[in-house]
Length: 278
Image (tube, one colour):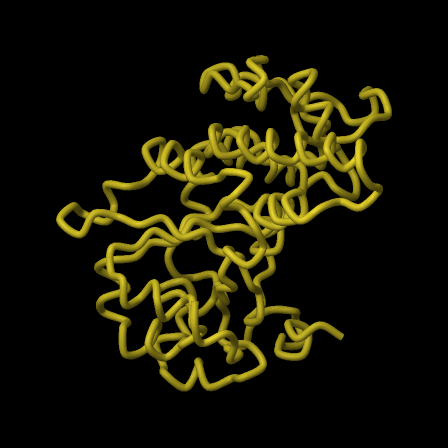
């Protein structure tokens, strides 16, 4: 049984009820009301593609991007379909509907970063096809970030170091006020977005660190400027699993009311010790 299941209450949620804190869906929020498929039980491709056109979504191969019914896409590697055809296979109903809807939300919120991840995945897939049947470290890392990634924007080197060292008390307790002033967490992983519909304490993201200027407001690096900065950093020689820092999401100050109590962080099943050096 997963750790998250062990610490959920009988209703499957975190005791005390997390989800009433700051809006973790903030990057997706502008696109959610007009496209949310939950009431109808079906995703509306037209609404997604209107947003895609308005945002000017394109692959790094130069193709305009559109969302298409997954049942109508020829059988081929998912990443290649996107990169070579500009089509994102999307399950419109049933199992996988919400997962793919959150993928669309991520594309609309972070078009350059998603296009870069797709390019890395497609190139890595081609290289694996030529040399080996294994997925390869780059494709694994890109997929991990695509599914469960967040952007950790921070202008305080001490907090960045605490995250890398798994020093949760330094990051979230002793550094709490500094965290609120100098750090932001931005959701990008679509699998993570789906899980946040029913959050649990052990829900863990994989954070890509983006340094922010110490003399600028921390919220200045968000939205499209952050998208451009993150996509530029994601390169074949920089993106690897070890560069992604585990981050228990409900430990983020403000993301769960219960974490205002320092005892929240004493749960070693969630806030685990890890590597202590870079």
